[in-house]
Image (cartoon, rainbow over all chains, first blue to last red; front, side, top):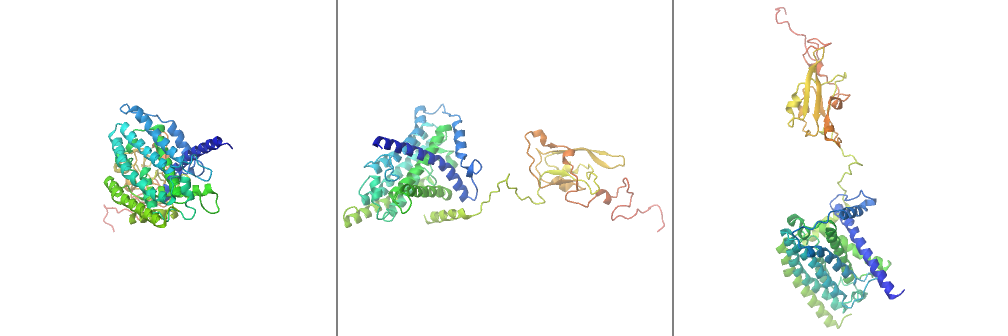
Length: 320
Length: 171
């Protein structure tokens, strides 16, 4: 198979898999939330309610796609596209298994960080362009959240980079042959998990959305497929963060018996379920608590982790 | 932080709990015998209408959903000419059942009375009357009442003594 054909197949496969998974996640999330709340969730449409997603999709396609007259039209239309594009771009650098993965960037991790920051712009722009006070408040919160969480999100990953000696995600996976980085980098793992939650605006860090106080936050004015894109973007973000956690800290595709791709999927799915459990269990903190937690607890912790890791690596002598 | 972890664990334990949902159309819920549902008019053990059209139910009804018209048959026995309950108004409070002196009006454990047309929720007497005596199988108002009615003179009722002739001095 030629190189072009291989990469084309990879991109198409990745696109189909992630988008399919993202819509499947809607079903999974509703079923799991129901399970943890002693309910059933959607179980009427098709086997186990699986076709509920299809029904919802048909519904959302036929909804009126309303752009409010007071909105900033071009930005309003662009904002939902930005989140999808930036998250899908990040998927390009995720190595799912040996030979599966779109590109092999030597700055893959930095590329991911850049793209995830781009995703935050989508929320800010949506909040601003809606020209609505609740949306604006949501966008404002998103901006503040981005500022405080992007910082230690990057820092928490530097420990992994120091240990692996590379920004290339594939090499980071290969560096975990002896021991998964979740053991030496447990602090970094916890910090990245929390930062990832904040990054995807998932509960308990869904302050930009905060249904109970801001209607729907930044997407109050969105309807139809534009709202659907925000929705899919959020689930894509969850998949992305889960995939990255398994790549960076849990040895990606590595594991006994099962084929590599299966291991990768199992680990990713585990973290997706964990994200849903977070949503089921934890209440949303107040905004100043969230900021304080980020700057006063998480940032020093990740700095400490980075310094300790660097010191140990220097003492032992070089990566690996 | 620790409390958050504990919360996560407790919520996770709900995976193994029984679900509380009753999947209604497939799985019928348990309704207690005294459940206040669809209202019926019952008959006495002999098959006659129990209702004596005293209007007490209509008076007791807080939402005025009961309408009836009293009339008498040739024996002087009262019965409703029409008896109408508007179930789109009824709040199923059961006051009519409590007010009824003859156990005629009764609430039953049934709530499946949805309609596509609102006016179909107005039940007439033939919709309300049931064949049996409902919750009180042996009760017949006219056997206890001191009223003279066809086939029963004064003093013939259950637990009733013959009338005393107040104009006579004989013991």
